[in-house]
Length: 107
Length: 122
Image (cartoon, rainbow over all chains, first blue to last red; front, side):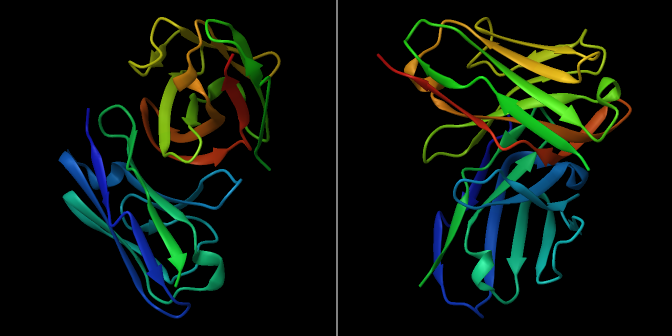
């Protein structure tokens, strides 16, 4: 099973700040099989990024994804109030696994 | 518009059973791989089970293998998850989710239901 480790576990930031979230895989993952989701309290996850770097429909361009192999990154260029949430990475190259999540909270 | 609507959650005693349902609309259900994903309170996401469009091929996480059964009724556009021999650690919100697939390859989850809460407690 491919284990995805997300870091940091939590980020305390202010609106307007940039955020860099990391997702590290225990073995190589094809970029096409790496996705990022945003989840707010009481809601289902929402797809943000697929194929490591492609934004899903309706996702603003302040969200960007990058990386390959075992290291992937989600970057939020300027945090808006609605961006404070938990973010998960997910791989589907070998079975299906999710990272433990990074909580982006208001400082 | 794609919609996934789960139901069937509730409070059940350890060792008990429950059947979850997910009614789908807005896409060709019979052609679509479908999955269940769960989330324990305050925890992360865990894939539980998958089923191909025909219903013949099914897949399970090790944590539920032998206790949970995924199935579907394509005439009713409905996905099911039968939960047997329930344990406290099965307490979670269960989401029905549709992955984006092409042929035999699936990638990300592009649609999720709102989830149904299963609580296993005496």
